[in-house]
Image (cartoon, rainbow, N blue to C red; front, side, top):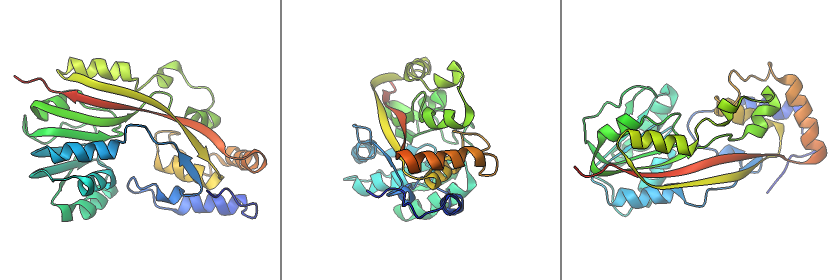
Length: 263
């Protein structure tokens, strides 16, 4: 693994982080600049295994389609019908270009809108890091016996970095996306939660450019983030990383396996 080179200036690092595209959910740019421990359950491989046994599958909030594309490439058999939704126009175009060769239909659908599919249309619904799961819509489009398999962002994720820029956050924001609350919402929508696992994962940012790109890409972490608005904090962070080494934070994730009961 590489770390920040001492000859890189603050201005150079920030310019790099500010210039790189934020489209899609490809995080390969961070190689050697930031790391995140992976959850133990292997989400993409799990989805690949489930796809092999499905007849019709839906990936909700697919981003640029990278995870679904990987899972389809690993699946022993592709379902007869695979669809994906995405709400951000640049990602819709990116996902369409990536997934169309696999026969996947990508549908532009705002994150909080009803899913544009018939009741019981799918026997598998998957989602990686949805902004907010639409439990009633997920339950509606699943056929009886169908499954929802997902990896969600958990409470307090990367809050060491968020609070560095914004200061102490409210308990409400700290406890948002709590898996117990999401379990209750899923059950209220008529789903049976078969498996719910949680993980707290170490992250390291090796240079300030990686922080800039991360906050531009994951826009809900520090809403309205720009280099100009946070230059003072970024300079101080650059000095801290140079003197002490990587900035350490922790992401939280939870794995959902829920089933729509027969009948």
